[in-house]
Length: 224
Image (cartoon, rainbow, N blue to C red; front, side, top):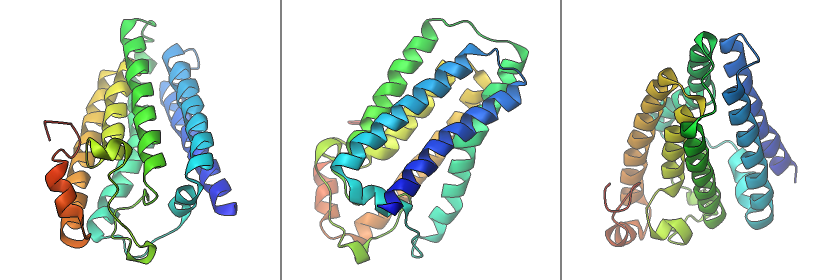
């Protein structure tokens, strides 16, 4: 399916852009944490896409489509999130690496473990939900229904939880305080998007209010 191939290529390209942003900002190639992040991220992305192409191929095709009914608030939040997540964070980490190249210490391995867990959660969420589109909208054209399978039985927005967790891990992998500051902004955007999408679904998706009463947490079980 052409749409799936385009989505896979675009997703892998994002990893290349992020790595290029880091090394361009660092002005050096001898930054081992940058190579670790780039290689691990690419490997997890490729593995996730391979799984999803087998278990939820239609969802991948839907993520490549363009939807004109995306609400105005998401048209503002999404570009900011994409720019900061795929470029800004890595430029910030590269600027830190320009000054010094932190050793491969225990914080790196902790970050990698958390990053792998975030990737697994993201794949689990995408595999469970056929309505996992890139923008927030009510998918009346696709007969959207409430998803309460897999991680959706634990939190209402596991995909966003995975993004937040991944951005907690990224500064640990890079060893960058500057990247941590940018990641904090990304997580704030994700929290805002979660709240806005949740409110939209409560208003417009049949059955979502009952689901929300049963699964009370949006991102963190028992917290929020």
